[in-house]
Length: 148
Image (cartoon, rainbow, N blue to C red; front, side, top):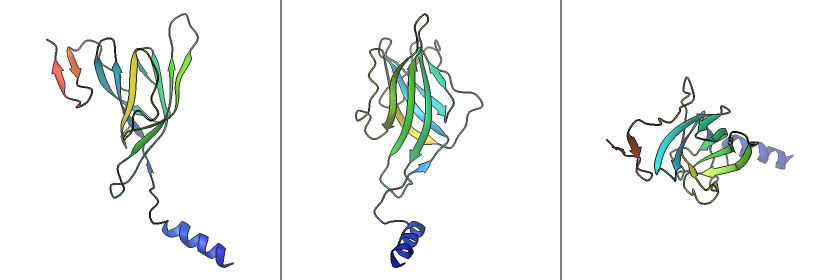
């Protein structure tokens, strides 16, 4: 009986020292085309596929620790390459972590994708990268610069 009461108290007040993550509605990703050296920021709503070039990205979960914890955002992603005349190929399925992008990275010869953040924002339509707007984004700082 005492063990059951202790378990209820721990569940009710939480366990100190254990980091918890809050779920969010949208994952913010950075996508890099290694051939053109152009990067874009994508906002992917949970369970809504978004297309980047030949990749279809679906985020199933996006969790982020609260501000009082050490910073971390993580997302469970499915990334499928769809090329005309070929069957779809799963190029990544799993967790990606914002603080350690190399820990669980997508292995692809042309594209890199990594998690930046989780936000509670739902777009009216999935964001599509601009193809020829004349700007590029610095992959490390996110600063835009003009190619014109």
